[in-house]
Image (tube, helix red, strand yellow):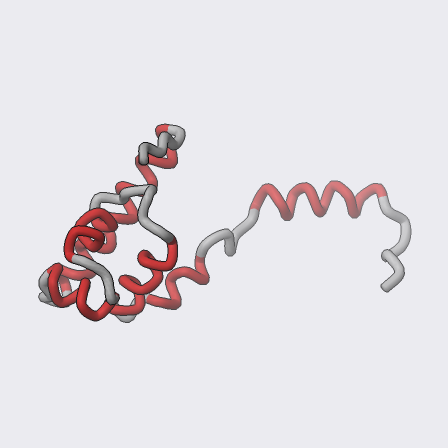
Length: 100
């Protein structure tokens, strides 16, 4: 199955893969060790390190867990600059708070 992502997303996926690979190497773990701990094949672990977009996000999470980096997933979309700007623009036009 071929998945084409916009170039910027492909580059970001490669960066994520490289960061996962570096984390594994810093811990002096083999691909086989990480794959075993993440309950996936070595081939899948290698595809994660290459930033393959066809690998399920759950696999990425299990590998992060195997590397003791599971909390890093909480950083995704944490700093939503655009969303905050849109929210602030909507607040400027409002005169009172919404009813809750």
